[in-house]
Length: 152
Image (cartoon, rainbow, N blue to C red; front, side):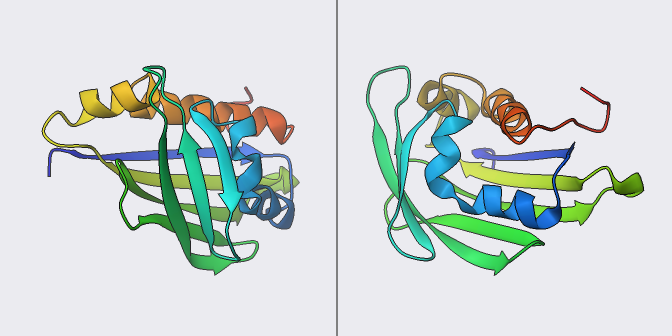
C-alpha cells in the first residue's frame, strides 16, 4: 500500500532497560519530546487519548491502546476507533555492549490519509514523517541524557 509509511530508528541511551521502559511508558510525557503532540491523556492502564496540533492549525484527536507490554523489554501500540491518521509502533529494548546503557529500537507505521500519502502526513505533522520521528527521538535521547551509537 503506497499510503503506508514505515519508520525504523535505533539508538543507545545511557539508562538501564527498566529506566528506559519507564520513560516510554509515561505517555503523558510524550509532548516533552514530540513536537507535534499537544497532549496525551492516559485513559486507563492501556489506552490514551492524543491531541496533535499540526502547523496548519486544525488539531486532531485519536486514541491508542497498548497491545504488548513487556516491562524492560518491549512496548507496542496502535490507534483504535476512528483516527485521521492510523498508526502503530513498537519499541524494543536491549542491553548495549560494554555497559553503555540500552539499545532502543523503534518501529512505527503510519497509514496516511488517501490519496496523497506522505505529503498528507507532512501536512498533519508539519514535516516529512520520517524527519519528524527522527527529531522526536533525538529529543527523547536528550531528555533521557543519552548518546546514540555514533556518540552524538
